[in-house]
Length: 141
Picture 1 (cartoon, rainbow, N blue to C red):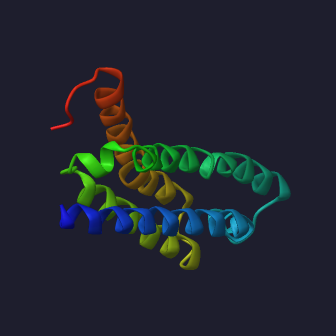
Picture 2 (cartoon, helix red, strand yellow):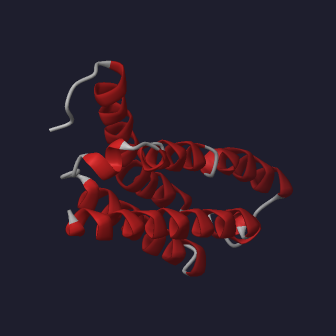
């Protein structure tokens, strides 16, 4: 049980780091949009890219919310989760990758790869586990 009690705070901290990086991503949206454009661009191209990049952050908080769902439930303390290290690794790698995305001005399509592998997959796993435990009343493992 001590291993799990040490992993739950780690998971919370990685979720918090992921949230802070996404907030920073919102603040630096202008430079990230410019990084996705050629050196010479028109205002129309900028508006089109900005409109296409606006949804960048919107699915992220939803997935992190799904990731925090089990943290608010008692089942995290009662049932050791074998996927807990994977969730920690996913959110930690998302924090690092999004930091590089912001500071190195990576292409905008890179964000979607980071989102799918580091936010969406852990969120789907968490929601499925939450439904199995609380909706179907099954033991998690």
